[in-house]
Amino acid sequence: MVGLGLLATAFGVVGFVRYRERESTTLQRQTQLARELRDLAGDDEVRLAAVDEFSLTIYQRLFYASVVAPWIRSAAWALLGAVLAGAGALAVGSLDGVFATVVHIAAIVAAGVFAVSTLVCVGIALYHSATTPRVSFSDSYAATEDTDPDPTPAADAPVSDAPVSDAPVSDAPVSDAPTAAEPPVPARPAD
Image (cartoon, rainbow, N blue to C red; front, side, top):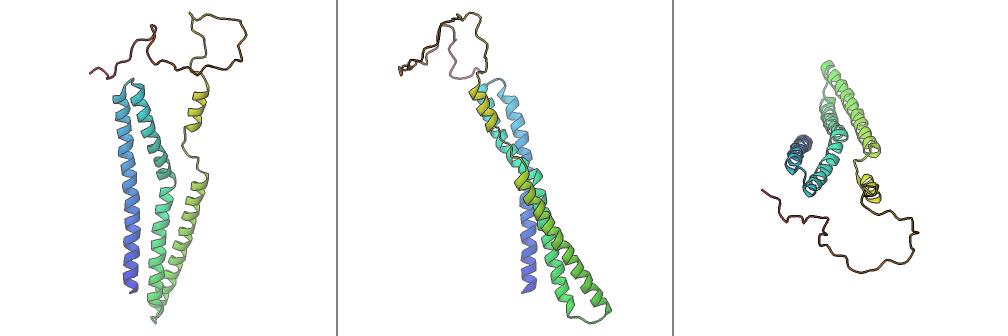
């Protein structure tokens, strides 16, 4: 029964590590896709914004995968080593003889080293999870929304020194129709 538990633990750890490695591979492919999409978007602002959002989610996940995930994988491998060394120590502990005693002591030492390694790796992973800054552009988005992208007045705009009124602004609907100064935007990009 113990052998079945050890086998299940080994398969579980190997499966977990393989899953995390596949996630890293997927993120690398998505990063390449984001680069290609950016090239294809050209100067189209809407497409560039969509690519930026896609890239942001990829980079947030990539940041985690590159900083925290290796420590989690290392902790999983060290835990497997501790379990296997502990099982080996238990299996050899009942045997008599000098060789059995040496193997028993070596298995106990190995189990201790792997257990300490597991705790260290988990501690470092938790430290990085708590202290690694998150990739977020929400602050920069808020800053650009608050400021006018072109603070200089237009050359043909009249400059007035008249005081600004504190009167309430009308709730009249604003037309989305292009003015004479703005050319109409085509519905579909030209092929």
